[in-house]
Length: 257
Length: 316
Image 1 (cartoon, each protein chain N blue to C red):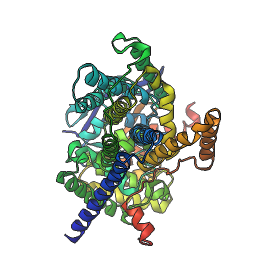
Image 2: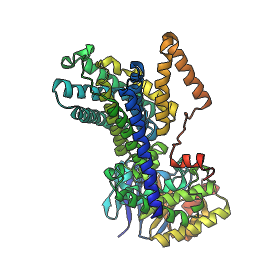
Image 3: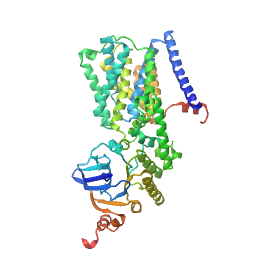
Image 4: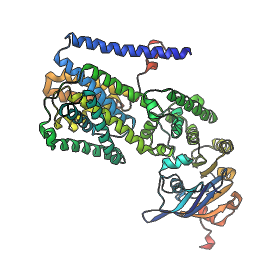
């Protein structure tokens, strides 16, 4: 069974069809890429999957269950986590607090034990602290634990955002342009990190990316979106030589006009 | 183990300090060392601390601009007076009833309005505060605009002091927990918070209800100290006063809210002699603070044991 299966998804803004009859599936532990020119509707698809937008039509089956139209926090609790195209950290909070917030959905103590400080509270806080440190260690951010998130360099902010998303313990991780604004060296490191994360956490990853070397390098399967429609899908090699894709990115050949 | 006993020792010393402060004032009051005017200031101070700290939970930590805090104070005040004066029930039931009524009002107001953001929410809560006032003006059972006169004076220094401490304790404990982090994450970035699995609407309502309950508590104490309550007392200027304290202290700092509440209470007292100039001086101070310290006196910083350790123990 597919981890995520999308059937005939449709979303329009006013009269503009942003996503038209989108069909998609991702298997457990698969690394899939979603590419397309600017304005093709990639981020809209992400927003539909994570519940930020409500689809007009179609169904989104996550582990066989329709999640279309559910609120974002419910979808996250079911096991889908994401990062953002323009980083959305909790800017004025410390690095470790950013990660700790992601653990809140599995909180082990209740409000009453918080207010009167029962032993359950201290035990729960200790567990959260040590788990958060684990994630910071993985992303080499442990020495910045008390730094304010907005003071981190750009690359580290990206890493922190991925750490925070992973801390919600998702089955599907969605990365919206993770390499945006990174130099080739950072991009290469990120590629390795993404592959490693998938192995370590045994999850599926879906990513949007403009950096072709990253997409072709790590993704096992690709979907190409243009004007809200899937124009091609398949292995990276197939996509590379697909005529429609080349047209979408580079324009049509003069002779065909 | 040693660390544990040490933190217990610190905790104990704090409790002793608080009790000492309480007894000191209590002694001064019973010995007649404090005149009427200072007694009133002391009362307003505690009430203002409760109001500022609870409003700070909504405006500062949750980041939802609410201008209807006086409305919840009114609900608490009226509910408790009905319980103690009309029904002749004990004060403690009046306090609990007042808090409960204000909490319910907070829930009823919060659920529809907290969908709104920023200035829209401010206008909606402002309107709700005014609705509560106008409704009270038109209920004959509570004497309409004339208000209720001759309320038994039940608020004592011990109620005031411990109510203020309780408010601070509850909100500090709440904020230093996973629930508190969830609440602050809403202020930082609501979309990201929602996508991290946090039920943002739920926590906004939670913060709003807790804030409203403490506003109700302040209302109860107010009503049972000043003999008289009128709907006019709880107009939007009162909400505005509270907002000023919160902004002055620093949005998102309980310490700041406490300091600002105490400061403003004393300022009001000091300016009583210059009634005509009072609002001018008051506004000037605010303008100066906002120009030179726009984040408020404390920003989002808190005073804690660590801070004291730094001040007295050198660096760390």
